[in-house]
Length: 108
Image (cartoon, rainbow, N blue to C red; front, side, top):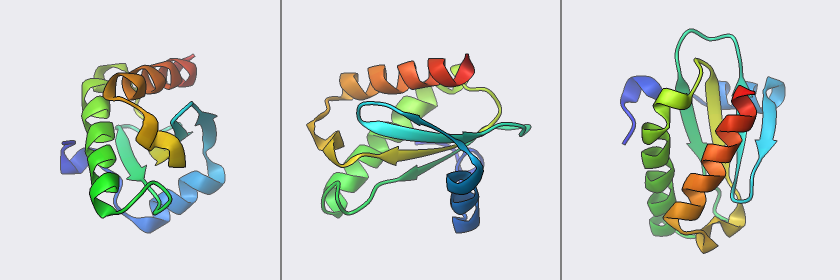
């Protein structure tokens, strides 16, 4: 789990990133990012299209774990990770590959 100081929690931060941030779409997730911040902040959004609460929490925990491992590759920006509805078909390794390739795109 990501530490509290690394997470986005306020609705206005999410809304601002959706409006002003750059969007990078992968196979299972989309990442909105906004540059120019002094620290890394990550938020996760999983709609009810993903599944019931148990399924959404499972994939939210998986995404948090992957981002915790990828912290060394992240530049100090704000990120919102939006799970696409077919994330339920992805294995943990598929998610890792997808997010790793998106982070490479963001950093280039």
